[in-house]
Image (cartoon, rainbow, N blue to C red; front, side, top):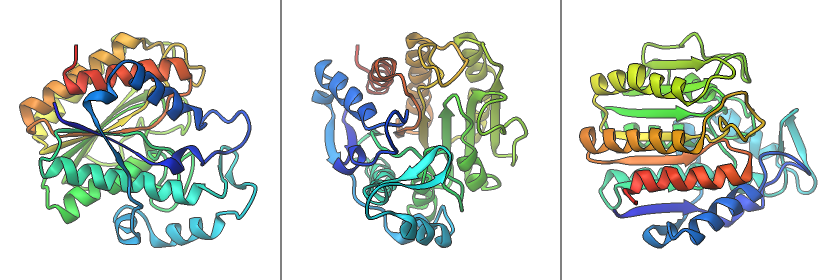
Length: 308
């Protein structure tokens, strides 16, 4: 299956300080694993463009764009909240991370590729329309979704968000947009401490209790996600792929294993092939245990690409 792997050199130049979990080594661990296991041999590696102000504006207030631009430091760090900081390369990386989703959306929508994976940093699903937070600056996937609906004219797209943290920014931006269905899982009573009460009828939020395992994920997908997705009939799928619910990742108290990520990815691939001509754009969100992250991204891509 023809697939795109979209990244950019600026993603490893952005960093938020010594020992920060959202570190450049995340992408190195992923790319090393994918090269070693031959996955990148069957993908076309493409360089992400920088998103334009107009593309960012479809998901964000332009005030947010200019405030971030003004906050970018010439040297050292500029702290935006206790967890989120900019270095001199962050602004460029954030623009290219959002631009990766625009490029992926274009390529998959017009049929150049059936699947695309955006290996990006910084992640995006916590960024709201007007605020950077939770390691995120622009909401990359929301920028891609709004490009699909506002520019390419897709009438129905779905966002699948599996991450130990609720994609609060994606929900805030997309709630009430009847062209979009968002389905998600996350650990309850964990940052950003919301999600249990959906903000719109187009949201299917499934909070999972602390210390639950992959069985809870599978029930959420089978009992909640798939019925909602089938009823909605999306023309394209977007995936916010977070790998921090893994039992080896100390960012959470969930107990997912490698096989759970393989399973949910296979379910996504199967639904996409049945419902929307196989069109999937996936983008990296969380995942901070480097070995588990690399293994599970490989399994995610193998499932999407139909590799053994």
